[in-house]
Image (cartoon, rainbow, N blue to C red; front, side, top):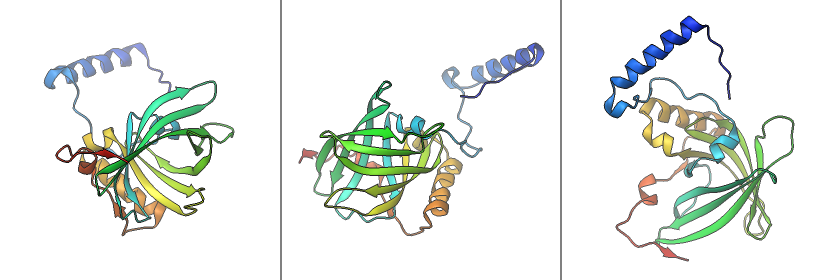
Length: 202
């Protein structure tokens, strides 16, 4: 959180501008400023997004068409974030699993998190290379017997889809910059919301 300090006169002018701007927009809600590049934010704030979606990955997922995570609960005393991970396959079956993210103990806000399943076993580790209000670039290292591979991925939240093309392109360009990958596996967000086909729990 950033603390701002204004003189009284500047504050009154700013307040008048904001009220005028709000009144000039539909329903009194200011239109989003999509001409600016997204500002950086702490990784934990992105993880706490209501829903996050896998958008691009350097790994191939031939049977998966949608991967998303819902934020369930932040346990402040345990410094753990509980999320519900949902994977939808091309057969329209799905798997749901509880995942607990715990930050690595470092000075200052954490950039690396371990992910545990409901049984307490380590699944993977993620490190945030870049984070904004709209998206995050992560390095993911799997730690299961079935999969010990790593990946570089772009995750997005609902703010990403509400933003304009400038912000969306900025997230994609950052993926290319940090992941050094131009031909990546892309997931169509529509598959996460397609209600025309039944979703069967695996």
